[in-house]
Amino acid sequence: MKILLSVCGSISAYKSIDIARGLIKEGHQVKVILSKGAEEFVIPQVFKYLGVEEVYKYNDDFKYPEKVADPGTVLHIELAKWADTFAVAPLSANTLANLANGNANDLLTTVFLALGSETTIALYPAMNSNMLTNAMVVHNFEKLKNIFPNLLILPTERGELACGDTGPGKLPHVEKIVATLPYLNTKNSGKNILITTGPTMAPLDSVRFLTNSSSGITGFHLALEALSRGHVVTVIAGANSTNKLDYLKDLPKLTFEKVNTTLEMKECVLKHFPNCSVYISAAAITDIEFNAGNEKLKKSDLMDSLPIKTSPDVLKAVMKIRDGQKFVGFAAEVNLSEEVLREKWERKPVELLIGTEVNNGLVNKEEIKGFKKLDANYKFLKNGKISFEGTLTKIELAKNIMDEIL
Image (cartoon, rainbow, N blue to C red; front, side, top):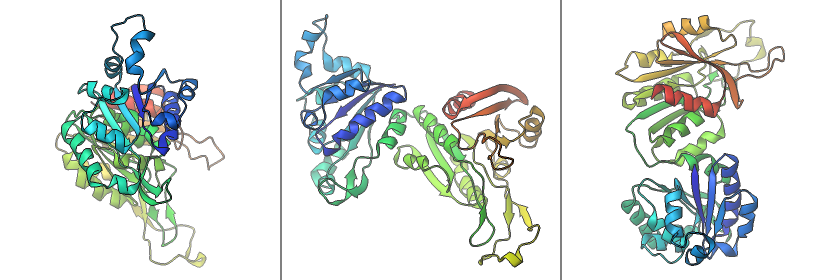
């Protein structure tokens, strides 16, 4: 993706260096525009050393024809056409006011006015809490949102600010921006996608519980991939899933909920299922339950075996109320044989069944597979036949699933 990163005069400007570096490491093309204020906080050449293609100063628009063979080149038009995403991080109150009032007094604001409606605009404010909530600043945010349907204003985070105050106004964590910025999309395909991910828990008593090693990272990448294609997404995650899922909370067109037990997962899925077009059941659902009491079991109460019962079958429950939705199921197996997958598919016929080879690494000190790993061995079962088998990263897996089901 081609990302035009604009930086304003905020104390958070130094974080833009790490944002640019992170985006480049993820394989994106990055160009940078610095406002006049930003040049007081960061040195342009640092970005170049990190792999940024070009760094432009606030007044480069006026001298740009001198730098290129074509004297008719207009820099702000060229950059506006080049960018897939135009991001301002951090966004200062001053630049916000210029954008809201249509001013074209430097390269950043002039490029903004030249952007097409297909370009996603992402604004990341960073300022003092009182400034952030000032009536004029709020008015400028609302003005931009009402004018530009392709513009997103990402919320700030709470914490200690540079001035010593505590409150909202902090630029989001660099890792969060890098992970989500390329997937912001203001287009809407009309599809609603429901994704479950991560582990559920089965309480044994008031202290202990049974769960598994699932991290929920597959659901994280599925959500981002769906958002990048313009879909509306709901993610229901086990409470012990990766903290990366929390990055999704503030994204537009995404609903995020956390649950603890399989029963809670079932109830939450049933609530959202009627509105979805595609249901992706990627959660590692605990399929047994205990008769948990309110007290901690004593050693004397523990026997060689504990009475257990079967947890609710979430996928089977939604199949009973299915009304044209497409289903993607997951089967986490130690033995990833075609026979095992076909047996599961025959019991719960889905459009696409993803078999994943897993191992938690705790038994016989075997290698951890699938869980908490960046890649895994997969088999896709479609129409009762293996359509793919091999190793994929979880990012590649998400792309493949979206291609197959949509």
